[in-house]
Image 1: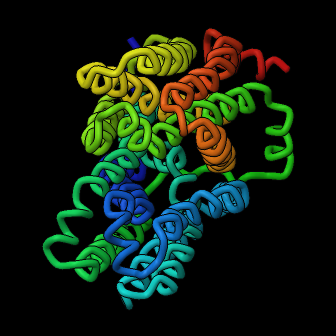
Image 2 (image 1 turned 180 degrees about the vertical axis):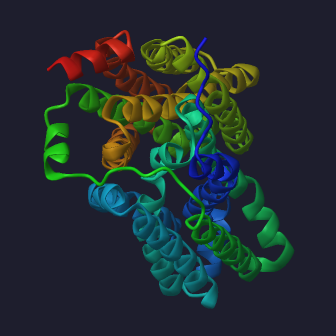
Length: 403
């Protein structure tokens, strides 16, 4: 019986340090989400402290989505051409933005400037989600690595929602922003150090490789799926408080969003490996979009507290668990060489969907049941896109190779 050849010294060193590289990257990913949503749980207090409207406080988060839309594709291309420089720049912009915010916690202009600087770094960091897995992990572990990195986004959302109010109560906005600056500095330093760890080489992206993506139907289907799915998720996160207050449940939105995010972390940990092992990525996508439609329709009709928790926890588990499934599928489909560009395209689609769904739900927000029905309607084309996905990732890859 043939023996498996022993790994080379370099491969052995990559294997030995892979979790250190992932831990540093996951910390930075989590930090980008904490900085993005710093003021989400303390919006009224922030508005009063800075002397601005609550809408202006919301703009501090909106600049991130706007920057992502503008920079996702260029950042992805740079990531594919020069991984180390792109990720280092992302880490430095993230830390610099957090430090600028802490220079004058009472100045809206200073905080906005910090948000803008940090927003430049976010696409450079998030576009590396699949590249880190390809560079540091063997193929059998790459799905797990992508799941951990994607789950770090949800952990960051949870940290921001649960700790911002506590920090403001303990030491005001100076403590909040200084704490976040320290976190960002530590995360950036960890990633810069991790770039010195051994890694598998990945070929740089060529022009022909990038051009091929424009006619890749599967990539565009994945983009459509994230456009609709994560557009609806952002619609829920943005308008849930208003919807539940109108239904007679004031104060429920915060705990429900935290529960939904915890369920999402569980989904990101469980679904990608199961989907990859059973070649059931399409099934997960169909299940996520169908769950969205059913839960939104059900909550439009009846809203007992237990059902709100259970329904949105199920949405969090399925929908947030689908992101690493799609990212893993995209890396399997296009290979590590173009993974950064494709990740940028997919996350760009998700951010565009967020803007459009949030605005359309806003038109119906005066009637909470209608607002939920609008989100249910958005899930229908998402289900249609999921049904158009190939049944097998392997068969689609083989067909592409045959062409």
